[in-house]
Amino acid sequence: MVNYQSDVVIVGGGLAGIIAAIELLSQNKKVTIIDRDTEANFGGLAKWSFGGMFFANSKLQRQRGIKDSVDLAMQDWFSYAEFEKNESWGKKWAEQYIHLSTPHGYDWLMKKGISFFPVVNWAERGLFVPGNSVPRFHIVWGTGWELTYKMIATLKSHPKFDNLRLIFDHRVNEVISENNTIKGVRGTTEKDQLPFEAKAEIVIVATGGINGSIERVRANWDKKAFGEPPKTILNGAHPFAIGDLHDATDAINGNVVNLEKQWNYAAGIRHHKPRKKDHGLSLVPCKSALWLNYQGKRFGPTPLVTSFDGRYLVEQICQEPVKYSWQVLNYKIALKEFAISGSESNELVREKKFLQFIYQTLVTGNKKLVNEVIEHCEDVIIADTVEELVRKMNDLTGEGHVQLNNVQDAISKYDGQIDRGVAYHNDPQLRLITHARQYRGDKSRTCKYQKIVDNKAMPLIAIREFVLSRKSLGGIQTNLKGEVLTKPNLQGQQQAINGLYAIGEAAGFGGGGMHGKRSLEGTFLGGCLITARVAAAAINGKTLS
Image (cartoon, one colour):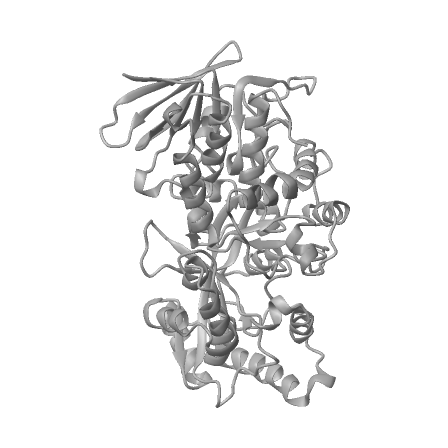
C-alpha cells in the first residue's frame, strides 16, 4: 500500500481540479491532485473544447453594444432550464452562477492573461422555449487549448508550487469516511493495479460526469423524453468520465441526482483518427443544409436548424424508428458554414492567427477542413446528382432506407422557395436563416439563401449524423459552498458531508444540476471555473460575492 498525505486531495486533473488547486495553493494548503490519465493528458477534456464560456453583462458585451444584465440572464436561464418543481439546489446554483460568472469568471480570467475573440457568439437562442435573449457565448482566443495550458502554466508557476503533488495513472474508486467525516481516498495504480491511499481531511471530486461511458449513458437515458436510446451513440466525452466517484460518493450516503439529464448533441460524426472507442466529433450543423431523417424525409413541420434549441434536435431525431439523421448540402454551403466544435478542428483560432481566420471566414472558407472530412470521414459522401447521392447514402448504411423521391421532394420544395425570391420565403428554415443573418456574428458564417442543387455550388454532400454523448447535466448534489450533501432522510432533511466537495461536471456543474433540462451553452467551462473557485473559497472559510 502506497500512502500519500496532504491537506486537500483533488480527484481529477481537468480544468475544475486545476483551478481549485491554484486557489488552494494561494491559501498555503498542501494539495495532491490524483488523475487516472497520463501526465501528457493533464487538463482533461477542456483542452479539446472550443473554449466558449457564458458570461452575463461582460465588458466585451458592453463594448459590442449588447445590452445584457443579471436579471435578463436569470430570466433566460430559468425559462430554458424548465426546472422540475421539486428542484432546489440546482435553482440556487443557477442563481449563484449567474451572479458570479462575470466578476469571478470573465474578470478573473482576464487578469490571468486570457483574452476573448472580439465577437460574442449567440448560441441556444430558443425555439419553442425562450433561450438566450442576447449573445453570451464568449470564445477564448486560442480555444480551450489556450485556456487549459494557461491554467496549467499558472499552476506550475505558482509561488507555492512546492506544496503541490501531481499523481498520474492512479484510479480512485473509494472515498474514506468515518462518522460522516472524510479521511481521504483509496484506489489502484493503472499500470500495476497496486493499491494506494491518499489521506486528507478534505477531498474534492473533480472527475467529470458519466458520459464517457456509453453503457452508463444508456442506463440513465431519459426514455420519457427521448424514447429508447439510439443503436449507435458516439462518444464525445472524456473516456475516464465514467462515474467512479459518483459511485464512491453514493457508497458513503452522498446524494447523486439527475443523471437522466444529459446534454448530448444531434450531429456527431466518426473521428477519422479516433483516440477512444466510438470516438465522435461534434459538428456545428450547417444552417443552410436540409436536415433529413433516415428515410431522406425532411424533419418537420418545424425543420431542424442549429443555434436555437439543441435538445429539440436530439428529441426529433430520437422520435424516429431509426435514430440517426442526414444533412444534405453542397460544397459552397460547406465552405461557408461547415465547422466542427473543438480546438482540434479550429487550427487558426487555436493558434491565434487572427488575420488568416478572418480571411478564411470572409473569403476562402475552410477548404482544408471540408476537404479533410470529405476524404477521410466515412460519414461524409459526395455526388454530382441527387440520384447518385441517394445511391451512395444507401450504400453507406447497407439498409436501403433512403428513398429518392423523399430527397428530391425536400430539395425541390426548398430550392423552389429560394427561386421565388426573398419576398415570398415562407419556409421556416429560411425565416430562421434570415433571423440569424441579422446578427453579424452569424451573417459572416451563414449563406444568403443558397439552393441545394446549384451548378455553381457542386458537388452535393450528404453527412450521416449520430447522437453524440457529451455532458452530464446531473451529478453529485452540493450546497452553495460546493459541499456534498447526504441523501435525504425520512423527513427529507440533508446535511453536508464534512470535508467532501464536488465541482465541475461531477457536481452537475453546480448543485447536482444547475441547468435543469437545457444548457444555454458556455456554462460547462464556466461551471468548472465557478464551482472550483466557490469550493476553494469555502475551504478557506470565505464566500465569493
